[in-house]
Image (cartoon, rainbow, N blue to C red; front, side, top):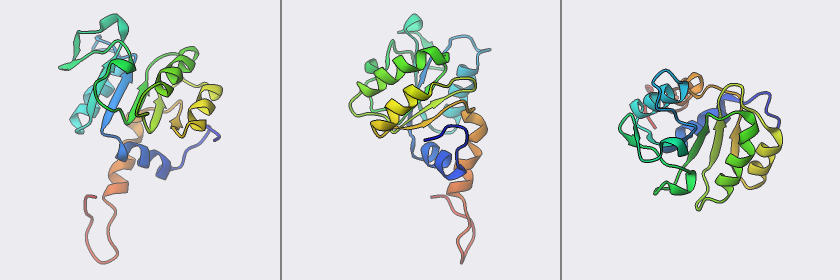
Length: 156
């Protein structure tokens, strides 16, 4: 897949099907975007699992921080990556070792590694790179609240 553009349907499908979200590179600093996204996702009803080996066992927004993706005790649907591009390949290694595997990997603005993405996609994992998840979230509302032909808008 080319990662220069994503359809709204592709992004909405990933976000609307995710329930458990791991945030790799989660920060205990409330001025960091990873913490803002964690709070945003918690507010939208997602189950958030912060991942940062430097803060394992601590909490971020009341959620236990895990050292690695393998330490999370529940299946993960979406891995949201807040690490630099040069670390994405190792994150993909961790994702590919998970059972069950997440449906998708999402990397935040400025994070892109096409070779790592191709490895994930070859394993059936959807990938979004260099996109702010919070900016795309309105697509979920749009996808799940479209009006029926014969009636008002509804929640899916």
